[in-house]
Amino acid sequence: MEKSLQRFSLLVITLSLFSFSIPVSLSLPFVVFHGFGGECSNNKVSNLTLSLRTLSGHPGSCVEIGNGLLDSLFMPIRQQASEACKKIKQMPELSEGYNIVAESQGNLVARGLIEFCDNAPPVINYVSLGGPHAGIAAIPEGCTDHVAPSGYVKIPTDIEKYLEYSKYLPELNNERPGEKNSTFKDRFTSLHNLVLIMYQNDTMLVPRETSWFGYYPDGAFSPVLPPQKTKLYTEDWIGLKTLDDAGKVKFVSVPGGHIEIRDEDLVKYVVPYLQNESTLSSEHEAM
Ligand SMILES: *[C@@H]1O[C@H](CO)[C@@H](O)[C@H](O)[C@H]1NC(C)=O
Ligand SMILES: *[C@@H]1O[C@H](CO)[C@@H](O)[C@H](O)[C@H]1NC(C)=O
Ligand SMILES: *[C@@H]1O[C@H](CO)[C@@H](O)[C@H](O)[C@H]1NC(C)=O
Ligand SMILES: *[C@@H]1O[C@H](CO)[C@@H](O)[C@H](O)[C@H]1NC(C)=O
Image (tube, rainbow, N blue to C red; front, side, top):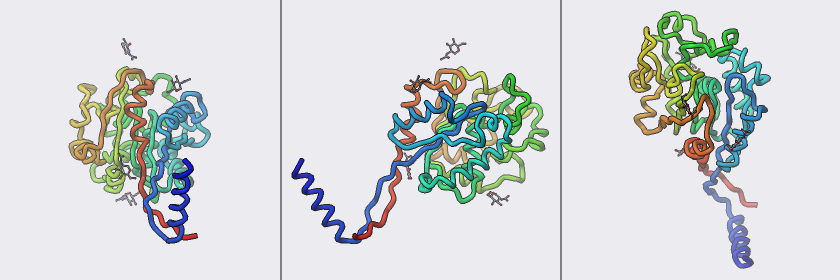
């Protein structure tokens, strides 16, 4: 003990005599975005955030949009994403990059942040829990008068109207012919890992495969196309295919209903993606 302490002190003294540069390993932080009708302070969301912090050993927090629950229902998703963009840029601890875990509708906020937010710190890994990435073909029960989901409802038999009037998802997915923005694609493609978790018993998302970017073909309610058979993938509108070809996409299917994740699945599919170190070269000045 004594001896190693001495040796350490000697090392510190020796090193502090010079100006030098060494790589410093930083614990990348993560942020959580909750879903429709959730809020950071609710038991389930705060418990998830705390569990992820404990299990990963990395710092992390839930980022609230507006006033929480009500804004998650009534604030248009585009505005939620723009609020998230502002907030993230005001968090100095994220300035070297960070990871995201998002639940349900919070995934459309997260992707808005990744694709639309200018001059933002980089998102390294992104874990999506039950996200309506390709849209939803039915409005969940009791949600008809809420504003937020209208940004991602996509009725397969009414695609023309969707492309013309939908205020959020067509742009996020680069779906409109002639209006595809390569910046959105470049930003999404720069992710290091994309983990898409689908719940086998999800009845909230129709179809549940939207969690993997799977969806109905234009014009019909069947069959559900796997992600690799959709135009978003084959024509690589946002870089999903590029990421997948590079081995950076994990399509994960877990037991349970909408965003009901078991501890063992959290440990297996979420935690490893929060344990990334960012190695930066940092200048150290002599005393
Ligand atoms: C694409 O998006 C970027 C970032 O928001 C924006 O600066 C650029 O003007 C957009 N390009 C087109 C062609 O709309
Ligand atoms: C999934 O749903 C089936 C049929 O309703 C049910 O038998 C099963 O217990 C459910 N599993 C989980 C993990 O929720
Ligand atoms: C909180 O999270 C832990 C770990 O994931 C889980 O075992 C526990 O059941 C959760 N408690 C509540 C109230 O959700
Ligand atoms: C960890 O993050 C660094 C950038 O900070 C990246 O280069 C590397 O690919 C990441 N590794 C994993 C496994 O996510």
